[in-house]
Amino acid sequence: MTSLHTNESCEVCFWKDGQFQEKEVKQLDSLLRDFRRNEATDMDKALYMQMALLQERLGGNVKFDIISGYRSPATNEMLRSKSGGVAKKSFHMTGQAIDLRVQGYDLAKVHRAALELKLGGVGYYPRSGFIHLDTARVRNWRGS
Image (cartoon, rainbow, N blue to C red; front, top):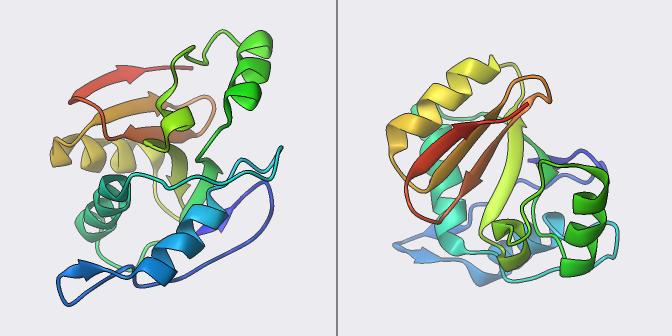
């Protein structure tokens, strides 16, 4: 996967022999850091599993482009002041959400695949060109 804001990439196997590989998980946490403040958090491992299942549903070796992972409260508030589409209690601030797209895949197809998982929240933002995944309750919505 690649962070579009930092152009950093990472390909790791975070799950092996039935357990998380902590070194690799930390690499992902770093990639998904709040790049504006250079702050990372322990992302929800269920989110990584959700992404792996989405990757599998789409046919295996797909490449994620990451728009947003962790956001510090300060960054979230700054983004909220500039856009009406940023939640005050965003799951990005707790490491439970990610905004992404998949290289070479139609966004609508990625959205359908994410919905089929029936895991957490799925937001569809066709004009902005990404989907949102989170590990909260199952729900879905359409943004701009």
